[in-house]
Amino acid sequence: MLETAATVSDFRALTEPARKAARILAIAPASQRNDALRAAAGSLRLRAADILVANARDVAASRASAAFIDRLTLTPARIEAMARGLEAIALLPDPVGRILSEWTRPNGLAIRRVATPLGVIGMIYESRPNVGADAAGLCIKSGNAVILRGGSESHHSARCIQESIRIGLEQAGLPGACVQNVPDTDRAHVSAMLGAAGEIDMIIPRGGKSLVERVQREARVPVLAHADGLCHTYVHEKADFAMARAIVANAKMRRPGICGATETLLIDRHIAPDLLPLLIQDLHSLGCAVMGDDTARGIVPDLEPATSDHFATEWLDARLCVAVVEGVDEALAHIARYGSGHTEAIVTGDAAAAERFLNGTDSAVVMWNASTQFCDGGEFGFGAEIGIATGKIHARGPVGLEQLTTFRYEVRGTGQTRP
Image: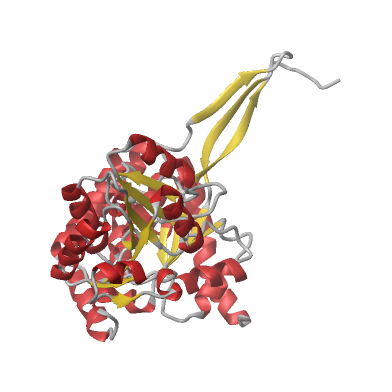
């Protein structure tokens, strides 16, 4: 999509102050950045009633699925979680200025590789308004300015959250332009962000497959991609049944609308006749619709049939596919065919089988005896996350503070000249 001159000019009204703010934020001491995060957390709490009103307006206008509404809806508890997330980020070690490596050359030159902020980050995300708070917190801590473009369905919530964070920044003596939202829901802002080479240093898309594909196709700015979360849980023949039941129920139904939710259950043929009916019973009791391959339907006849298209679908809803497999290698082959490189888990008491699984999948995150829903920056100790990177360059898995920095080389001499 081509932008008009007016659209580009309007967008520079965001990028120019963002670049100025980024330069200030990059050299601000860690204590000041941490003060801004704590002040922003306090502002979220003080403005919680206003945020809930704005969110209720967004929810009332939505005609989406129940899972989508769950991602969109804020509650007092979720606002408090956002505030605590900012405070948790403030407690983390400063990622800026870390000495990543250092050495001295034979001629006496001392060289250091030092972590530095990326600059201005453009964040394009869908539905979940708390994503904007997490992104803002991580960017402030890592010395980056950020321009946020949330989904149109969460526009009022996102703007109210951003305003709360701006108040915190200014209370700490930092520019409010460190965190900005696009002014309205015009889709032209997305194209303007994707074409803002030289003004935005990195684009991070967080949303559905079509959004990520569009960003990767059209961007003239480096992209840190977050692909769809087609996650698998594989129950091996040596799995403890009680553990498997708890993990599968949690991996699918704790929050079925998040990208770390399991979309496909793989189960070993040897234990499927005994365990699969119990797993299906658990899932049905939680309101989950289950589809199965021919073997699974031979064990539990009332399952809906699962097609290849079903196995290739990220549901983000209370739906799950089941495939019966013959051992670790067949499970890995299924994941290689249908997976998106996000998160895979194995449930087993066999350490050798677990290691084969962990080493045999090429996904960003692999787990042993744990729910795939632990694929989360907060759960990894990052304080929060700006997304889950499924590519292989720069960052993989939950993207936290470390992944929001680049580096420079500092060379210190004593008068050396090159022959």
